[in-house]
Length: 282
Image 1 (tube, helix red, strand yellow):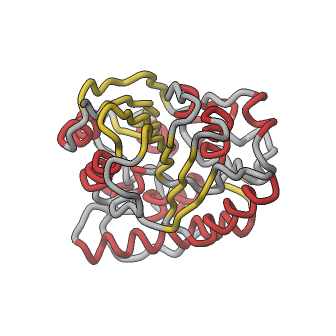
Image 2 (cartoon, helix red, strand yellow):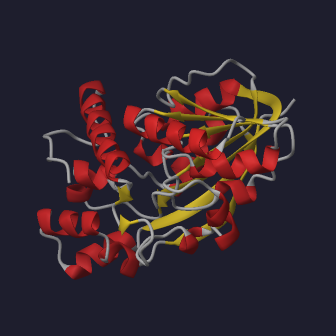
């Protein structure tokens, strides 16, 4: 658990720098430990199967690629084709990159971008030990992508954009690097109603993907304002209170903010996981 900093999750540039540092530090610890906030990735508390991954998906990826950090399975919904170039925003240890690589084949290519050096190192090790020659991992922020204009056919992301303070900039960058005719498929956390101020101003809650979430309509508008068209929700799933209540990070947030069980459940009921599709038209 990271130390709480005296910053606001939705404040000025100085605050945003503090948030990014906290997120980077937290995910660096996860990369080094090989575990997510739900413990070892092979335990029942991990969410991979509950959010759309199948046994056959998890059986073909390198050991250590699944840290249980997602909130959906964007690869399953992206309809990737052989030979395509795919970009994963916030690629972590590489689970979605490796699943994408299996779909695009040797003629295709997958690029993973992550701002945490330790995650990049872990993902590169995973790629090397499993012989994924069509996957590369680049260090960078998704608000300033290290990718050329009009370069990729498809963009995926899994529970990452909610961690970015400037979501409009992230979607604008995604639009920039996508080829005309390309598509976006992101799984993320959004709100159905506002969170209590105590949660919104908690850095721990931000890192756990909760406080950084915005209202669903605002999230969709951010995608449209970047230039994407035919934007639509493909899947929407409530977040299980049982799942959150068993999460050590969530428990620490509840204790730190002195939330009652009723307040915690109310906050969780404000949150849903969505998978959103958009296109960059010709």
